[in-house]
Amino acid sequence: MSFQSQRIRAVARFGFVSLAAAMLLWPAVSTAAPDPDRIAVSVDQAKLVRLPSGIATIVVGNPLIADVTLQNGGVVVVTGKGYGATNFIALDRTGQVLVDRQIQVEGPPSDQLVTVYRGIDRETYSCMPVCQRRITLGDGETYFKSTMDQAGTLNSQASGSASAAKPTN
Image (cartoon, rainbow, N blue to C red; front, side, top):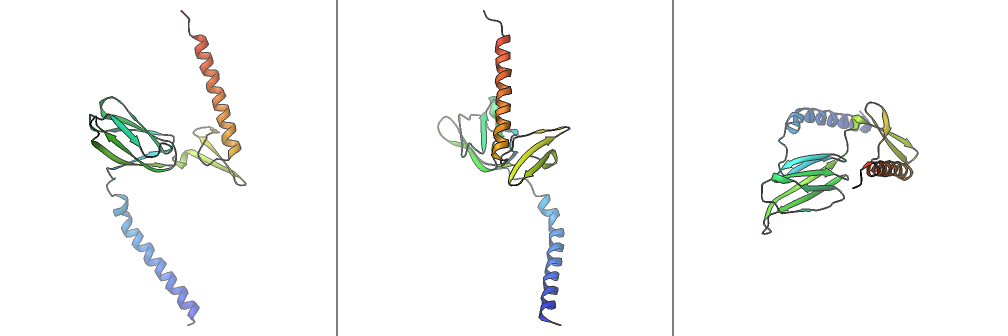
């Protein structure tokens, strides 16, 4: 038996053992309890989180990744703004730390999106139930800008129509 065939058999044996170990360990990993100090949210989505009462100030580590807004009754709205991880700290009126939690912002569920690559440029569409443009971080600059411009124009026109329809006193 040549050295090359011995090496191939050793690599195959290692791969089989690794696969078997992964299959045995998967139930333990997949059923692990979620980390109570970590909040997972998808980009462009919001999540309500109940915190202790008495919070006066919230500090977000990186506001480009997540936004945290305090509501009445100790509820905060965590909104995913960009991919990655950051943290937020909640303080009471005396400056005492009440909460220090991690926020993990992940991509949107991929079963709702279609991604089109045109060379190195990327375009994202939401296809639930009909495909429409969807602005996603990482899309090509031209696609992103044109979609944002259209959304901004539509928003301005809708705001202008709404204010024009308001009765004046």
